[in-house]
Length: 594
Image (cartoon, rainbow, N blue to C red; front, top):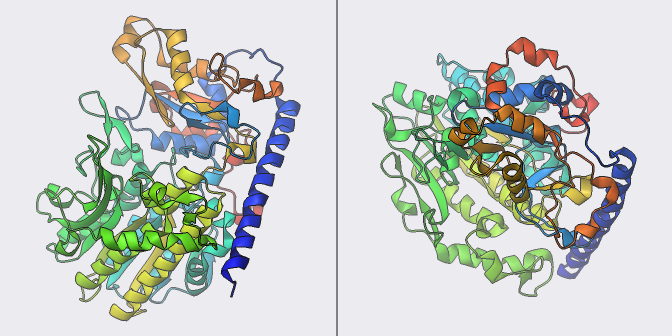
């Protein structure tokens, strides 16, 4: 076993290695741009068909599935591989050992879309693998097939799980690792021994993906629960255009499921059995309720269990730090109604030693920093605290203790949170993944004792991968605030509502009155360059290599009219595309994931 000092030296060496990689990657990226960048003046504006052909049919099929008419923005953005949208950021960090660490991840490329689907329990064949193309929409029809339900879905059931379930299991228990796609797991291969053991004892689907684009939480959890893609279940992401035309939170910042257009497999099973099964989730905020459904909002349904974390009041941003739920539709168990912050704080006090040295810091961060409401869910302490809540529910609700199958979903938000805060490449992410893996082992051990190892199915998946730092990959952080300013300068005041990392919302009344077409803006974006995206006289702009300036930042941008008019034969005609990262259906023999 490592001593604390040895572990510290190893982690310090890792940190130094990360910084060296950043510096080398920056040099390599600049060299790559110098070899491949245009000379400065952009060429002719590409059409949407030309952009779609460059992106290719596999990715465009995902984009089509992920666009929700009337709810998605008027223009969907597809940044080039390794580019991502971020607010105003400090150009002075370029080429330094302290790069801007925050990222976004709604892009459709392979490193973000490939995810694990691993299942064990009952009579599932140990060590089995399936290399066929599938996606997270297959979870719901798989569960329906096990339960003998008629169920409409966009994906086929996963045969090895259905066949291995034998007689109806007492429980189907699903853990979704937020941001736990294959690229995150591969970055930290020593951090998930339990997941590896589950692969050995069960079946792994090595060619699974997320089924749609953008790769964003709210949409994909609803796909898992309903078995259909966003263009059918109606949840385009975490934000959408509401019925009144205003931009809104998809769960109305109140865990309100009204915008979910179809039922989930869990609630249909519950209703078909007189609301006797236990259906529930432990998750982070309302965005993940698409896994279990509408609760009591549906006629004849009951209040399913939902334990959600609320970091801050969405109206005032005042810290809340509590378990909560909308009790009009869901039930917050009484034993979790009073949040045990003292226990969470005790776990946080133990963070200090986890990086190998006792210095009142966790990888350079103070306890005060780590307890800030919008940082707190990204630490191993919060992972353990969530594990406590899950085990409390398993025991108190007696999951799997009768002959009617229960369905329970756990969403482990912490790896995604850590990736956004400190980036997926850092030692913080390794530690958070390690604790996530440990808590999953704890959940399964609790279920083994309570339900019996052969009496239930344990499933692990993820909603997407994570975005490496731009310095690692030759990418560019697209300043969406500058993008907004440039759209207004080009097309006029009032045209733009806002630009998100996913899409662009336009004021269509102004667009029509000004005689502007959304397609015109989309094609203009196809020629938008790094130079365009640098604010005038921005400090640090001299650190941007000249060879980079003429590079366009988007692989494509598509208006809602264009996407809605696409037919299957149109998508097929786009072919393979120009980007290696767009080969999202390649089997494992042609890639490294899985």
